[in-house]
Image (tube, rainbow, N blue to C red):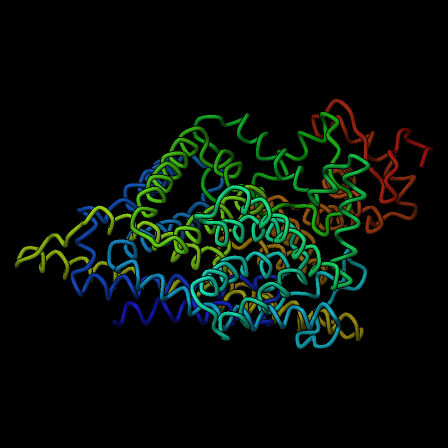
Length: 606
């Protein structure tokens, strides 16, 4: 009962957690909450002796995901960037443990009931997103001035960004539809309406397509082909109609249609081709072992620079020039874990397919449609996004997938195993091990959250001091102490190292600033770090090194051209880039200017 209460609380409360004080790290509290609650539920299941059933017919989920975890762990020592691997590997192990433990420890109907707890919070956050899209209510004061698609960026619900909001509403919407098909009730109807409206307001087209696919499976299960075809037309018309009622969503749909007609596929996919191209480049460079779990972002700039050198054109309307994820789960697995990871992923998908077939024999027609619809929707999201890298999406999806595997185990008539004194001893030992993992993860979560709060506090105080013209050395010294404390708590966070360099640069301690920026580059290359490192080197009189760093900054993010500390950056950078090409070891240099033109001559051209 305690384990079930924790899983139900996860489904209910996870969408409601939001800490605006963390700035861009809005996903962090949700991740740690989900991991700690998930581990707590596993401790309770182990203490009750339920996890011993993994060794029997209820072990299909464990057998499906175990190869992926083992491959990631085996390849970890080969990674060039060990810090992100060390952070990602425990997260993968916890998620895999939750899937395996929940499917073994709970009966299928209990997991199905837990999914219903996601409906109230999902419906409420969907309606909040709609209010934000229509400009009725914006409690967080999201700053979107000057950013492309500013209206959409303000539609965050309590998710943190519109993409997370839209994708997180997919499974609750399908659960509400399945409940309504079973019998009409007001609660699922209201929740479903909130999910539909919030998803449309978020303008997340991949989630909308996944909802259309999943709805067709839920309502078309067991129906003749002609009825399914009519149902597909009706669902598509309904989705387009709801979208047309919301002006921002309607405008985005028209824009995507225009991009499609013009043949600009990267614009249709909102720049996803950039992430896919980099993932394929990394896979080509490391085909067998990949770059290491979680290292895609750390490797991104090197791969992007190599592609730009070969003439690749990157999407010019990105809000941020560095992708943290490949925006395709299979491609990210290929980049980070290579061929071995793809084989392990294929094994996991094969196990899920077998579970869906077996569960279909044990489930009612409506539930069978939900199982296939939810799995199909998640697969579509995974092809065009990264749902299993976002706790708000991943952990409800793990509850759903555990339900599918548990239903498959019920169909096989699995029984409890490990009974008797020996089984109780193993259960007690497993509960102690899981409790230790829970305690260790709680300590790590508190450290990382505190580090981020310290960083955010430094950033806000610095911004306030600079805007008021009252930035003093004493303030910088206090900030540096806070950043040192943050670095001790989370030494792998590159943002802390960059912030330390920024404080030293403002303080005028140029040598120390250069060292801080170079330390940040060793953790993860970023164009803004190259820019600030170039600024520090220029002020220190190291013009040659500064030219190289500034050239890299513009090469990786052409929009930084206006921030280059030169009197006439456009003319100077044209010559600077061509002059420093040889110093960077590159054969040729070019840069796409903010207007979209290509600078072709050192002293002229656009």
